Length: 81
Image 1 (tube, rainbow, N blue to C red):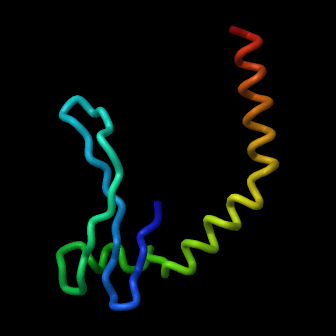
Image 2 (cartoon, one colour):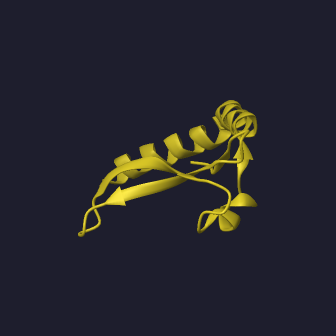
Image 3 (cartoon, rainbow, N blue to C red):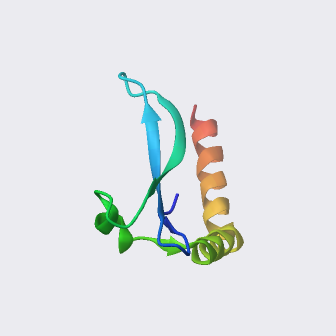
């Protein structure tokens, strides 16, 4: 998940909600406005919605080698089990 910078300057920062024992309940975005605590911390890492969309698309298009490598590893692990 990426930190998304909206046109009005709002940042959407990913945040996970977990239980006390560490189980994941879900992932969501928290919105930070300019001047909010933590805003400056995330600003340099933020991407516009279009930049995030392009990164996701590029990753989906270019992950074929990685996916093949993972599937070969997974098959090898299943054979050894």
